[in-house]
Each structure stands twice: as structure tokens, then as C-alpha cells.
Length: 226
Image (cartoon, rainbow, N blue to C red):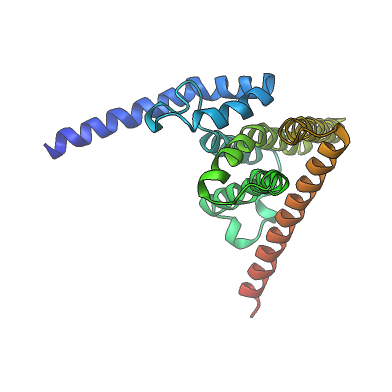
């Protein structure tokens, strides 16, 4: 009985892994082509029975994590990545991936909290979840662009740095544009107010990300100090 249960578990695991090969590019394509629709989709899917949620796409947090794994692989594949310049604790692949997931998850978290604050929504685990999930959809492609931009910046050909900067700037413009549209739709406000909320929340998240990175760096330096 235990052996058959193990076989069934392996079958399910194999199926779920292979399904990702189909639904990851589908989710990425839909998010890039219809970002606002996918953010609304995140809200509505959570109202379904759990077994029926995100049946035709990846769940937003899983989608974000896969993009972060690809981001990591792109950096490792670069001719001269930043791996050697990282603090000792982040030299380990597992630690680095966990750290990146935490860092980039601050973006959807802060943007979600900003919207809830503006709407006056009571904060709890259930009210935060749909807003956070919606934000994961638009954050995921940005992590991919950062990985692509970082990999290009280490290429040894003329114009690599310029192309890399163009990827970063283009990704940032797309991200802020989607956030502006999202705030304008949810708050029923003007574009200026929506843009101010989008930029303000994004800057706040960026500051928290840099502060977290700085704390980890300082802590690591203290650990190696004799």
C-alpha cells in the first residue's frame, strides 16, 4: 500500500513538473500581453474551489519563483557574474535563491499594502492574499528582465552595457506603467495620483530591498571579522 502511494506521488510530481513546461511560457505570454487582465484574474481565481484555482496558468507566487530561478541561472551563465562578489552566506546557491525570493517578494507586498491602505481595507491574511497574488504576476517578468539585463552587462561585446541599461529602463517603464493603470483602476483616481502611488510604493520597496541587502552584507562582514 505504501509502495503504491509512493508511485502515485511520483506520478503526480512528474505530471506537475512537466505541466510547468507548458504553463510557464503560457503564463509569461499572457502576463506580458495582458498584464491588467492577469492581475484581475488573480483576484477572481482565489474565489474558486482550491482544486480549481489557476487551472490554466501557474499560480502567481509559483510563477514569480520560477522567474527568479531563471534569473539566477542567467546570472550564473554570464561570462563574469556577480557570484564571487557576494557575501559569504550568499555564495551558497540555496541561500542566494531564498534571499532573492524574499527580496523580490517585497515588491508585490509593498504595492499590495499601499493599495489596501488607500482603500481603507482591513488587513488580514485573506484580504491581503488576492492583492499580493495580483502583484506577483507583474513582478515576475521584471525579475526575468533583470536577469537578462545583468547577463548582457557582462558580455564582452561593444554596446553590451548600453543594451543592458536599455533592458533595465524599458522594464522599469513597463512596470511603473502597469502599476499606474492598476492604481487608477482600483482607486478610481486620476493618472497623476495613480502614478504617484505607483512610484512611491515602488521606491519604498526598493529602499527596503537595499536596506535588507546592506544588513546582510554588514552581518556577514561581522561574522568574518576576527
